[in-house]
Length: 294
Image 1 (cartoon, rainbow, N blue to C red):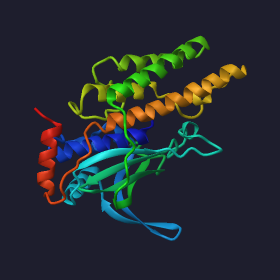
Image 2 (cartoon, rainbow, N blue to C red):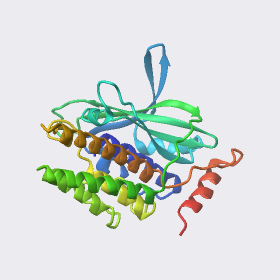
Image 3 (cartoon, rainbow, N blue to C red):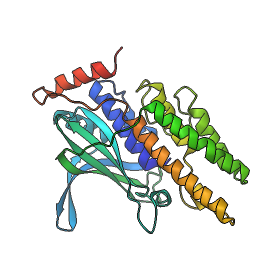
Image 4 (cartoon, rainbow, N blue to C red):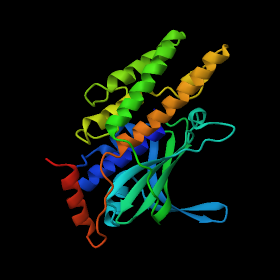
């Protein structure tokens, strides 16, 4: 999976842990999704004509969590916006940093939300600690009320992902792409295993976060992610037109199914519908007692 996506999903999950009072020390900067990052900052973005201006907000994720809680944020959610273009699809543009569609963090407040989007830039390629990435999350919308697309249940998303993984695995093995077929098979296996990641994958969810099926969706999506640039599944072609057409159709379906699975996995709790009269501390206590019973 792209590190840009993994980090954003991780921030949303650990932000919810912070709001619940359960965030463990050391999440930043030692979390796996911050590897190779020189910094991860948060800024307000203000538009003036065709330009955006930055105003500092938080110098790291922990301060960001704290400041947003103080302003009444009661939940973090993940949003995805497809940006398919005529000349390049989201699946193909996933080879580039910032490609593959837009991933946003929604910071939910009573009756309104703020939206944050990441920007990744390469800094010093010769950094002795290999921390070459400069990451800034910009607040692109404030106090907005954007309707959320209805999502299937985690169990339904698992069924859909399983179906396309079975089909594309069969296709890969049949067409001498067994190395990719093994990736799809690992994804299928992850849908049935306890929701734990391995040392080769990003650790995105905290232990005990959400129900097992959400972890299974996340792990299956990581293991079956084959999209990228040169040498990836996107780089394959077939001389036979019918075979290539099937490859394109299955690839697009898998890409869309994985994105949906990641959204479902990363939004495991119901959206708050809390009276704006309640204080943020009372809101957090009320909702986290409901979400994290026991």
